[in-house]
Amino acid sequence: MSHTPAPSAPSAASAADPRRETVVVFALSLAAMVVSMMQTLPVPILGLIRADLGVSTADVSWVTTATLLSAAVFTPLLGRFGDQHGKKPTLVAVLGVMVAGSVVAALATSLPLLILGRVLQGAATAIFPLALSVLREEVRPQKLPGAMSLVSGTLAFGSGLALVATGLLTSGSGADYRNAFWMATGFAALALLAVALLVPATRHKTGGRTDLLGAFTLGLTLLLLLLPISQGNEWGWTSGRTLGAFAGAAVMAAVWVRTELKVREPLVDMKMFVHRPVLMANLAGVLVGFGMFANFLGVSYLVQMPQALTGYGFDASILRASVQFLLPGAIVSLLASPIGGMLVRHRGPRTALALAAGLGALGFAWLGLDHGHTVSVIGAGIVVGAAVSFGYAAMPAVIMASVPHHQSGIANGINSISRSTGSAIGSAVVTTILASQTLDHLPAGVPPLPAESGFTLTFWIGAAAFALVAAIAGLGLRPRPATRTTPANVPAAAPEKVTAV
Image 1 (cartoon, helix red, strand yellow):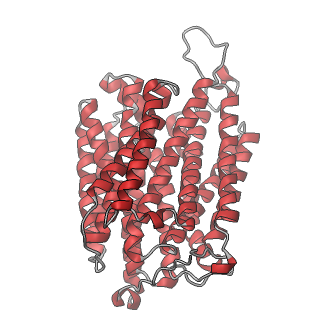
Image 2 (image 1 turned 90 degrees about the vertical axis):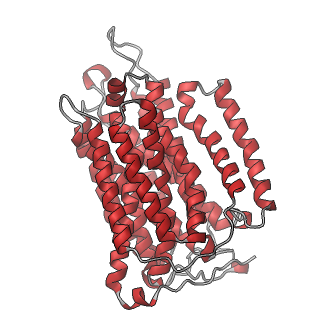
Image 3 (image 1 turned 120 degrees about the horizontal axis):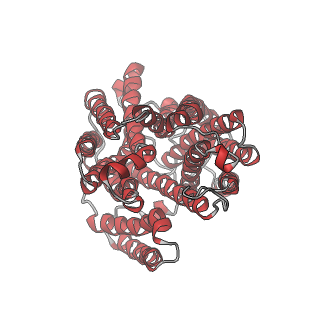
């Protein structure tokens, strides 16, 4: 059955004044970048936090887990709320919450307070789907793919930038991890001002009730799914808590689907949710998110390995690992964003996703074959960074071409969750592999260190993930000739462009 949304015309002001479009894209790109920074910000400083607050490794892992779980609960709810009651007010409110959460995290003197700050920061993940919905209103159709690609590209750039900036702020003796959260506060305040002053008020509002029951059941489903993924390595993958949480997630997923089928105004339209292009974009989101985190964590851990003890690695400090090995890929991911937009516009999102898959598989295969030379690690990271950027450019274009205007916020919210879920899985897989494959012969008193085979396996799994993305682009998004149509929201595409079917 054909499903082609009606085109959404941007405002007369934006159509007449390209500078206004540029300003809006800048403000939303800054906001998206800051949100993505919040996800990876504490990764390099977990050891400092653990030592300063006197908590265990298992307990400090909640500093990252809390943000992931918060994002899973609030992103779909706030995405739908913005569609119904106004995107700009919702954006401003969410950014205000992120500023407050950053201040709480910077001032926290105990782990519970720090976790509270991280929960508030995680709620701001809803900015991304809201930003894409605003772009759909404010940007001319011929410029929309490039604008969406630039905003999407800042996600990969922001994640890498946070690692680098945190490394810079916490290098040297006597480093204070709170400096990283004060930096986050400054960026969050800047994003809040940019959106409040530069983004126009929302014109399209659907109104209606907020499906609180659907939001609750979906949030609980995601909590029960992501909690064991992120904590499984600490709990044990076959422990009662882990298996029980996965079973609970399956039960709650069934309850959520039943709820959404019965509610008059559901949070998520099930027909939209299982619509083939949307479903394929979400599966691609899981895989690309997995690849991004597998690259960040795998490379970061690899280059910090002490070569004298392990026989591999680069003896890199946190600062060197961030600046020399991770920053180049983050910069390339940002530079690749407009190229991804041009590719989406002229060749369609299917081509962009296929190129992302090829580059990602190539980059990880390069790491799997040669991770003993600096040029290989940096070069492969650059290739993977471009792949992630192209993937992030393609997925929103598929979504926007496949759903009606009033569902764009929630549809992109679900896609955002799919990427976060993939990142959580990537983190869990990398951690589990490196913890399970350790060196046998180490001097007394030296903590367990991963064997090189663990990194090799991690990189080949990353290559396999992008190979699956290639299958999605080649088969899952292949147009069906009998119902081929031209999507309204991705103009000027080549014949192979994704169609809504």
